[in-house]
Length: 242
Ligand code: ZN
Image (cartoon, rainbow, N blue to C red; front, side, top):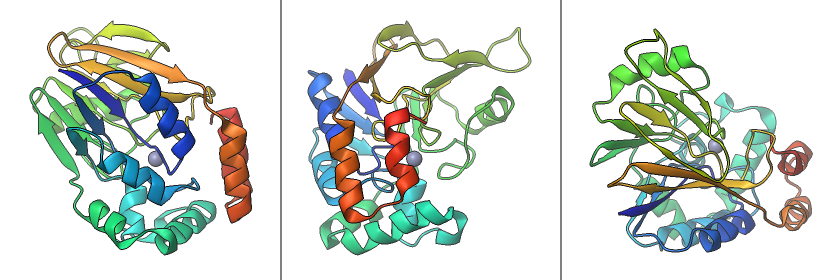
């Protein structure tokens, strides 16, 4: 099965549409959370995502904050403003879609979470030490995560005390080997200094994982954010990819 894997769309419809067009054919979609927050198109993004074929979708921390499941004070001032705006905007049908999202799903030999297997909604997997602890919190060969907006792989092995790995090279297919934690990067707000939308195509039989990057019309999104009055920092960072 060929799976489109993506995360952290963050209400950026232009980046989402480019990703879906670039992905060609796929049999299923795994979305790792944070459909909303930061961006100008929360309703449009949820509607687009919830109608994708064979969708499995996970709850992210921004989704949870919009629903009031986690304290909005846990976010910085600017992220909070975007969450409050999103709350006012979302239709009842889209809120109810978010309310049904699970924090963790296992499909075959892959566990799907937003943050980490230890703390599915909140923990950031940024370093190999934190990743090491998290290998004890899932049983499958692989775990796919989002949340950091960084396309990263952590590989657990017998030789090194901490997992090895690093950033995924753009537009290259790599062979996954047990056990690994993999992040496809972010569609709507990449933070690895590459502003292009990030996603992956994963083959469940061969375990080939292809991290892809695709250009999209960033100024168009920035203009929509400006007209709504979303925080300047969130507008500017899109062009810089951080
Ligand atoms: Zn996010």
